[in-house]
Length: 191
Ligand code: ITT
Image (cartoon, rainbow, N blue to C red; front, side):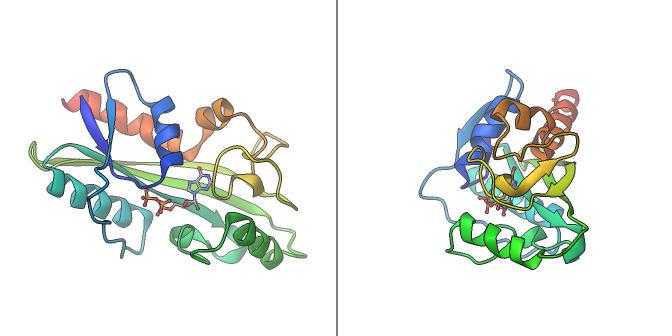
């Protein structure tokens, strides 16, 4: 089954390429397509709006992912603003800012959340799933694997950050892995 991945983030495509089953073939969005609106208050609302917007535009099955880093002692920040926080600045600057906000904080608990959505306006159905990976925010920026906030996130059970762990390890335990594994398995039962 050919499915468009409604994302402009190449790192997400790389990860889902390695997570997806063989019967799913991922197609990139055409360059000419406008950006989907992202006005939701939750990861689910944003994932739904991306998937529905592109599936209507393309008249084809689409998957979308809305995800982010949720830090307990910052009341869930950056959360749905993970990408938009300090927009235009490098992730190094964004991570430095977060580490500064956590200076002296003992509670470093955090999680990555991913809401994945499949939408097919022609067949007339939408399904969604959620994945989380819990862990802690490191004391410094470590490693260059992955993307975004990976170099400051230590998944539970490990001492390395996602920036230090090999991509196969991240892709076997991540929020994205859990969300898309469930999504594809539900989809398998429906088509
Ligand atoms: P699309 O909307 O085009 O998919 P985006 O990167 O803007 O791309 P989101 O709105 O879902 O996507 O924002 C996700 C942000 O959350 C992402 O840019 C990172 O800053 C952070 N994030 C999500 N998953 C992550 C991961 O696996 N590792 C590190 N950071 C992640």
